Amino acid sequence: MNLNELWQAALGEIELNISRANFLTWFKNSALIDKKNNVVYIATPSNFTKEWLQKKYHKYILRALRNLSPDIKQIEYVVSAGLNHSLSAKSLLKTKTEKSEKELNNLLEEQLNFSEFNIDPETNLNSRYTFENFVVGANNELAHAAALTVCQNISLKYNPLFIYGGVGLGKTHIIQAIGNKIHNDYGKKVKIRYLSSEKFTNELVNALREQKMESFKKQYKTLDVLLIDDVQFMAGKDKTQEELFHIFNNLYEHNKQIVFTSDRPPKAIASIEERLRSRFEGGMVADISAPDFETRLAILRTKLQSKNYALPDEILEYIAESIPKNIRELEGALNRVIAYFKLKNIMPNLLDTKKILSTILQQPVKLITGKDIIKKVAEFYGISEQDIFKESRKRDVVKPRQIAMYLFRQELKSSYPYIGEFFGGRDHTTVIHACEKIEKVCNNDQGLNQEIANLRDLLHS
Ligand code: ADP
Ligand code: MG
Image: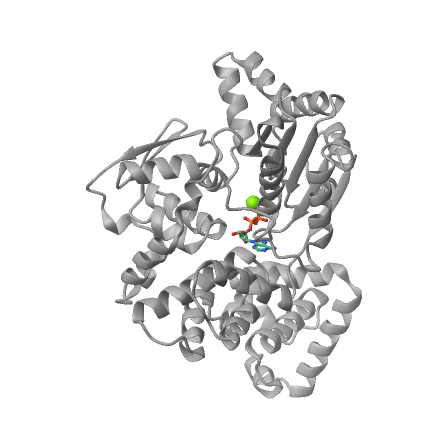
């Protein structure tokens, strides 16, 4: 992988983690210009962007890069005015042909309320996350109730509170809402600190390097409420876990409140120390799942209100229907729809909404051909492509052949006679028999099921 490929691959991953508007705003015209020893150099068009990347997106960038190239230890951000635009974000290039895209993005940038700057330096909390603007549905009511209980009974009831759920479902929102509510209710009487596990790790590493461990630890000792977001990232980092464990014990023994979030339950976090895991499980564990349709609609309504814009129900319903799994994406889609209608200065309508969403939802769909199926199946089972077409009834050929037929049916929706023809003029009843057999075995055989799932992955990747 050359530098550009590395950066493009990393951008692809970063894009999935942040809103599209933010991605376009902060990552366009960025480039990875050098990699020396364990340091990569990322060029940004302005000092402002540089600071943002450093402050706000460093963890995403580092994670994405390290996933691709684990030797990377450090990132240096540099300002470079004459950045070559051909190096800019891949997804931007994709849409560059659309003339109004640029204007749209400008508007989106404007629309982005810069409340992201509203971070209290003392608590590290962003005031935009509150209980007031958190919509409660069946998917999060347990976590919500537990969070409120914590606010009203600091360190008396659920300690620690451990909240887990998938990406973009409101973990950060809820953990910060806890902090903001306590801060509002008690002011300076209660000392709060919110941080991501990555920030925690970074601070720890710095403290170690600068031999400031004493003050690092002391700073935590004085806290009343510690909120740590995304603890799954601590997996595998022994020293971080060790320190967290000590800090945790210390706070816990002094009756201080601790809240964690994670993308999975404590049990599912690989390679964390058992004693830390049992600490995580020692209080209250609550999950957040994907919101149902009504909740998604309610979320859209809440967001719409704060934007002072009106959209008819059919549009909101369409958006809610189209984006079922991720509230961040739901919000992104809403922003985009609003930006579009504002820009064009037209009445919001369903037809345009569908068009806008289809460009957001469009995943590059790979067209699979019959040849691809034959090739992959042969590769997968270690036989030659010709073997699949031959008359042979040997088991190690028959099974791949039947699976290939099954995939023709499933992936290409080919007719039975067509498949028969393709596989060397076999009768269509043979094909039906093969497909039914694979289906039947699949239902009872996890192994075969997995094989076919793997094959599908190979076909689509
Ligand atoms: P996570 O940390 O789980 O990845 P976030 O807390 O960052 O997700 O949520 C993603 C976006 O969705 C944020 O803008 C957040 O405000 C919003 N959001 C999530 N859940 C809700 C909710 N129940 N009500 C309103 N907004 C929500
Ligand atoms: Mg989060």
